[in-house]
Image (cartoon, rainbow, N blue to C red; front, side, top):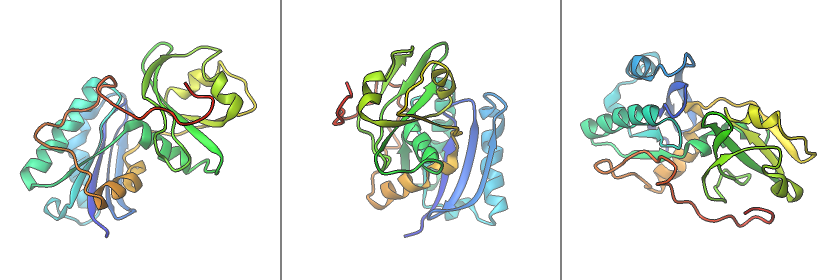
Length: 230
């Protein structure tokens, strides 16, 4: 099964769009010029179809980074994705922004006995974060956390942890621990094909009519099952 999927990422300051056939990225575009979503999103969508010699009516589904992240960015991405799904009667596939970061980090550091801690900058010393296993599955509750020198020390005693995302640099400046690893990753639409394909094959689709982005508090995740985690 190799569906043609459009991927939209607008959850942070980066706006990016990818078109994929199965796991193959046919075309991808991005802008990191600070919250340029309104200006760039629809032109990026048009360009990825043109560059890959595909037509929008060939699509099998739309993939959207659904949060947590910037309220404005998430709303812009959701409006575009829902509009396309409505117009073409397509399924909408939602991917956690944090999970997308993890799949980007897995391209740089991918070992068996490690965990991933993606961090989205929520201004000042706050981050959106959660823990994921080495398969990219969430294993802790997503939270809005204020970080300091003692953050994640208990978890690091029992686990090698890869910290990643645009909130990672400010944490890296605070922590020194033998089990801490750091992956310089950018949140991009091209990180989403693997988890999106799994959801597509299992028909795990969002209800287009009622879908809203996850603004952290609305997101429900299972509790941690890893020793040393709260």
